[in-house]
Length: 362
Image (cartoon, rainbow, N blue to C red; front, top):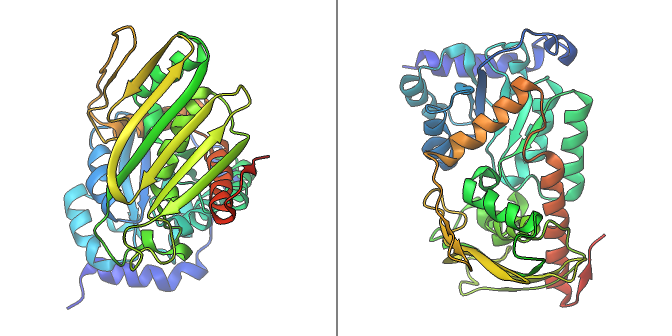
């Protein structure tokens, strides 16, 4: 016997092409809310174990809806989070969220290859867009997402939770204010052992690979520690499991050069654990270990200062910051342009690894 929820899921799919969508400019005139409804698109691990629980502790936003391609997940999500039938969608009828005033933000939590398509769809129906990292597979896709959000007058934020984390923000401040002088070098490594053998992160067409997954943490670190954009890169790939990593990189090593002369040496992997960041300045250094875990970020500086500020939940802080920017119509902390800058460098890293040559970044 088919459940009510599944009947609703199937009925919505059949109506997807016939729904009348309200123009985005009509939503722009809605009364301001003090608390925004968020719909999660994709109910995999990150949504299930981290974002949905975090949304139970946010002050400026809440879990209002879900978009999933797996009907069997719906009943549990509805029971656990009290989500009404009218706020349950599938990938085919997601555009009908345009007519739902309960949902203000659509959070894209899908494989990387799907980010651009669904972020653009969300923007075109007049909903603000939050997109998980990495923003997309290519700089061109990133630019298309940014344009769609600009054209439809919605805010776009990329899910770089570390930029919302206080110890990371202190590392950024040390470099920006030159507390210990100019940045000379950055060393960053981020990785974990992924024991799966047939996951989308191991498929090129879906945007898999270490550099896209964990690598953007190291790239972000190099960029926010120096406050600069890299001008050149050298890189190489390696693997200890070539029977699994046939299409994408298991481990990537790369070196960046910045306009000031600062350099960064970075490693990222889906084959081994690593989680360290150290910035060396003209007159000292600062480090974080771990620097991109879900909690327990801590470190120290060369003059003995401890970097051990804590927050209850990184994802809740990120989403509250982004929701407040929408409510108050201020700039988001991590806009789409920041995601694009990373992907521009990621593409250069892959070119450098393929060629074995230094690649200059425009």
